[in-house]
Image (cartoon, rainbow, N blue to C red):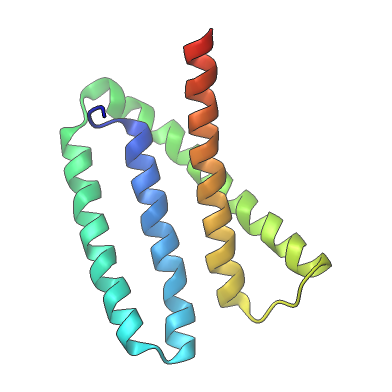
Length: 124
């Protein structure tokens, strides 16, 4: 399965961002139970992310800033793609939906780019 890696760390951080991006939807909808559960899950993912960071070796830690830039770019691209989608094809029900769907699309882009990069490096 493999040990800790910078790529897994940024994926975990992306999951945490997506989870946090859903919180406004629960606040706006009055879903206190779901909000509480999501906050507990966020705490668990944050703890796992910190543990993962502590287990990284120095070369992997040096790769993290570049991967975080990629994650940030992908999250912004996901927001832009979803904003375009809602502008052209669907009715946007609120900024909360755009935020959660956009960050989800961005995380998917990030993980797929990591997978594609690893797959291309493995075949070269």
